[in-house]
Length: 216
Image (tube, rainbow, N blue to C red; front, side, top):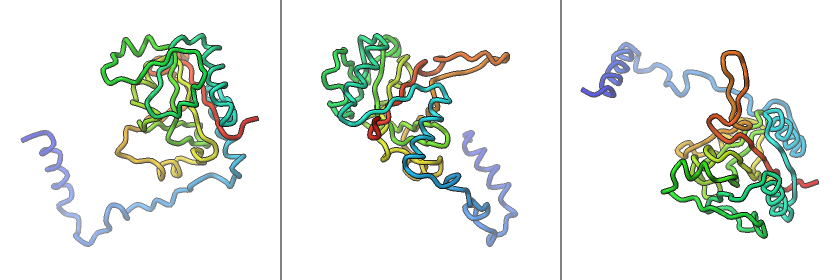
């Protein structure tokens, strides 16, 4: 008997005395959660996203679609990046004219090879304003999870307002739970027992988020 069979057997025994007409599990607990806290305009929701991203120590930039390549190029230059990893899906215009060696997202790339890459540029699936969270789902413009966990510098492009939602419940409605979801709230960080913050332990040390569409 496998561990799975033993666990399922215990579940069946625990439910043996539950009446057949008892309330089904999916209706037993009311789930009347708020879909968002307060009513905000699109602009106010984007402002809240920017504020919460910055509160998590992400670096937030804004630009128009036409300014995106220049913005990405500037961020890579300021970082001193010589190589940038790009998944297969982003529009080529994102890095048009950017004078940095582009590294392809290859299945055979080792962690050591990825660690030598200076930066990675991806899109996202959705951004949550109330929590300052970026969600990646492994779509072609985001690539596999490991390319956003190993390189030390991540530039994430968020299309505004299409990819911005107010709350986690609204984000969940847009996401496919069968995909490899990565929820990112600021750069990677942890604290020891004395609350000394250390960044870059299990992900990028620097997260830069480019909000594209409401450029100033």
